[in-house]
Length: 317
Image (cartoon, rainbow, N blue to C red; front, side, top):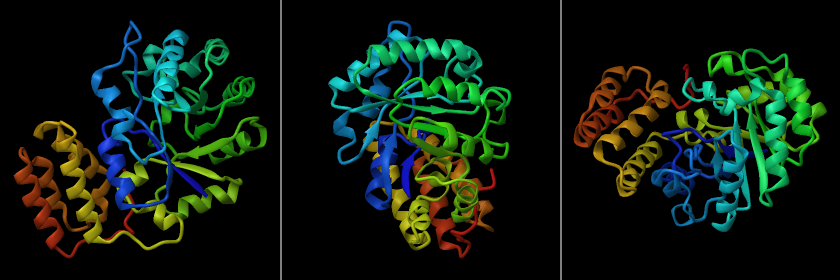
């Protein structure tokens, strides 16, 4: 099985990717959180910093673009090609309420003919490999066969299917039957995405359909050793998790983030990791309330000194 790291805005930036890559093995390809050009086709400096080759040394990184204007995507693809990248990813799956109404991300799936025109334009004017990350539809998955027919018209380097519609956000059950349909009908290489937190979920997928590539996102935030475990390796140890968190904290500060934003990133990560510490709710609440890194680290010391770590507890959402 081949594993990719999913792009997660605010979480899987280069500080996280580098720390994960150093501490844990198993990820073949990393996708950057989406970069969205402004009206003139330019990117924010922070977004560009995240994909600079010098900030991703030794990592197989694919920049992901969120836009609905073909000329902007074509310009971005050209820029990334000049930076040395061989692949660019189109985000046609983001379910955010600030994205979809602008007909970006999963919002592109509401206009299947428009999606077709967009793809025709970018594949006609781009030399770099183009991969796509998609959902099954907007309000439901009834139109997924039509969406897949559109994707089949183009030489997509890899099609990652998040097996939910946009309305399901991250709460609804994944539709493994829809991914099976993709396996049976896609003309392009496929990658599965959606709710892989343990070997059990991976087994459920493989019971329904063959699959060679899996993209994991929230599962890796909840347990950075997940891919190692999926590959039959050992469970996450408390000591190595603490080392990972300490190195990540230092990397976030070194990347230029302020103490405030470093804390925000770490606290967001704890939303996913907290279920591995049953009984540690008091200290987790303290670290989430921390206003300074010193307070955060004190709460972290207290949490890790307690005997409440269970790496087999899954994220409950």
